[in-house]
Length: 472
Image 1: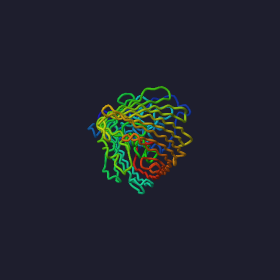
Image 2 (image 1 turned 90 degrees about the vertical axis):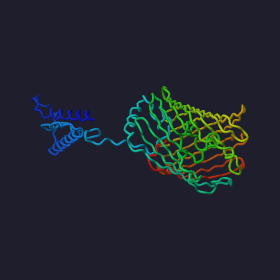
Image 3 (image 1 turned 90 degrees about the horizontal axis):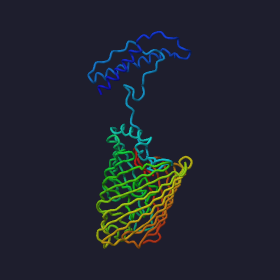
Image 4 (image 1 turned 180 degrees about the horizontal axis):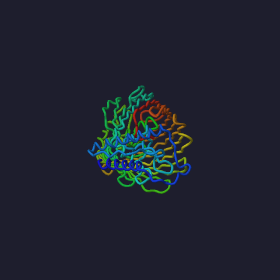
């Protein structure tokens, strides 16, 4: 600090002294080489230089150094004005750039890596991102709140949420930089309708740029499995998730405590590839009675891992044209599981394949088509059972205010592989602002105990604050 102040003072003093020294006569200026200013502009420059001198003297006094002698003169007319923008002595440092109101999901843009994902180190965007991290790490954290309310009309009398409005979830997000290139994310959720107290849904650190293209995440988070799992439920493009993900993966998202290595593979041309490898410790498993007790609706147990499990996901994207792209992903997870009905503990393995196509029209218009299939195989004492399912989804966004979606899903139940359920849903979303949307979903389906049911949920979702985690 002292060296920096002395250096600035020396340079400023030397420059002023050079200006004050008489200059030897030279050739007369050519026409156009001189600049004439008014007396008022000259006095304004003079006052600015004086203020700069006082600032330098104050900085020198703070480190106990004598002030540099004042220059004998002032800059002549035509000299450039002293710096007054960000980085000038005495000027306040620029405020850290604020996070966007809604950061897009990490989806590959045509011709490059996914927009919204951290730029791989070594790329053109990486120095800017690393510089931003350096500016951020001492600033106040970003704090946001997202609240969802849902009302449900249903013909299935076993549905506990039938014909009522309830608070689905409230989420508090706290995010910020704790060290250059180290970002902290924490999301705390509450579900009043289920009597759920505050719960830490995610809390993890992201180490950016350990090596070119390599990032590390440590803590509790949604694990990289399937195309939806990293998203929070208010970022979905539907109210109720596909049944195959609910029954075979997790009710909302598969979570764990552990670490994940994310590597952006070196590629050529308009092709992007990212590999994620993680190891995790699971939450306590769901008991068999929780998923089979009548007369409640039958729900699959999900992955139901009971201890440490591992995950792997390869995600690729290729630009088909300047307005379209194709994504292909593959996921795998394996770990010990609590056995289901009349079975002992065993091992469960999940695998999935997803394909997404996007076409971008004029303005914010966009067409999204997606399909995904998941298999869950559980092995107990050398005997295995397999349940599978899939969904097909399309979403047409006419403009930034409205979109239509169509979802068809079909799924088996791991605890009863001979049974299955299916549903077809029409979805309309009205995006009133970046912080508030309404969504209506009409569903006709078949499930054990009711082969012909109808339901219509309505969702209100609003948020305040930076709201910087992934969106679709």
